[in-house]
Image (cartoon, rainbow, N blue to C red; front, side, top):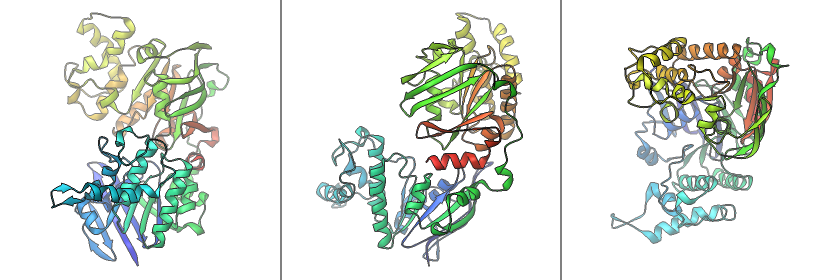
Length: 500
């Protein structure tokens, strides 16, 4: 008998389908692994089970009886606990307070019972005794902890729910090997007493070390479930990839001129927070892809090249000459351009006209103090038209545009004065298919005109269809290069998951 079963579950946000058909069945006394590529829908499926997302359709069964998970409190009442990939800790509260946060012990129904809180938290802290690291204590504010220690607190918090069904969404991503092994020992003990557990991980070694069964989800649909003892890594990746067509390289051929061309940008041993010993070369006219699982250092490297993140060691050479890029302003002077998918943080100047949003780089490069709007409009219009941007007028506020057209404005600001190196940091996040098509048509045109382009995308198809070479990242380092006929979805997945 299954402990938890989700059947035909779906969820859409407007035109974006996060989950088309999610099926998952978890038995008591098992660790059920859920795996899929970035954006496949696995986290959405788990959030539906935990009540933080309401499904549009489908059913949820608990002990073979239909239930409605009305919200996080409803999930808790039903005996479902979850570890969130995005940590949900209170930074100013202590470790012990965070562990007990879902169910604070009270005196007379009004005041926190401090002695009971301390005793309860101590039971879960003791589970990880010896692997928590220096500075970890029950009374330590969570905001003072390292990332791995905060992740341990989140795990303790989930365990403290004592829920019969536990969902862990990438719980080991920041843990070291000793911490992972201790956590797995805990899971084995929970399995032995009949707990049902869902475990999401991108690490193949972990999947085979702790899992009993594995369910693969692809593009919002559950595509298969197997016993871990009856499958292997290659079979799982084939399920994640899909049709045999995805095993062939994309039709776009590598740029013929780049193989013998001298390097425009040469990076050697670049290290900093979130990345280590990254080395590569890129020539004019080449599109170099950064691949791998989300959050493996790709964005950190791009921001470091643009001077927005500190570099602790390594060398950056432009046209053979060593350069220091200490700030975005300096990077722009050296010929770098940077486009982020997070336009709210890194791109759009909120509340200001389109003209002001499209011309600041032109001001900086030309050292302008004053300029006539008409003259700026003459510069801005061709750049906006190159991306087929839809707008009422240059005086209209940027907020009046759709997300896709806002992103086009952010990109257009770099086209007025052509850069030498264009850094694209997941640039199509949150924009529609038509806008993506316009962007990548322009990207290839810029490459043909001699711009060197580094592209990180969380969408595999974008990398495979637009990159001449792909560097696969894991843990902040480059683990494999895919070029020519090696640029297939299977090889991309295999390199990312094998390294993980």
